[in-house]
Image (tube, rainbow, N blue to C red):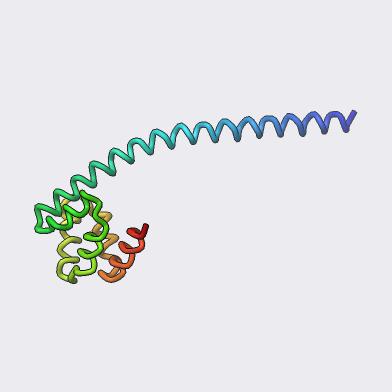
Length: 123
């Protein structure tokens, strides 16, 4: 009788655990789809806004390269970026609603940012 009760309890616990895991995975899938849709829209909107800000502040070549996804031109721009330009871009981001990005840019050197950019642009 004890063995039967133990087997029954173990089966019930495993069944409840399996159902809980399956339910949780399904719920995460649904939530991640909603989030990804919003993030995608926000990324596009932010990207367009950032390109416009760059254009308005004298970096039209960089904005054009960003919009056309011209990775070679973006890399050339980054490689020729001076410390003064890097500071200017950081200030532009900070003053136009991109304070977290400006903070991140301010926390690394221009060369580190160039290296990070190049590693992201590798295909």
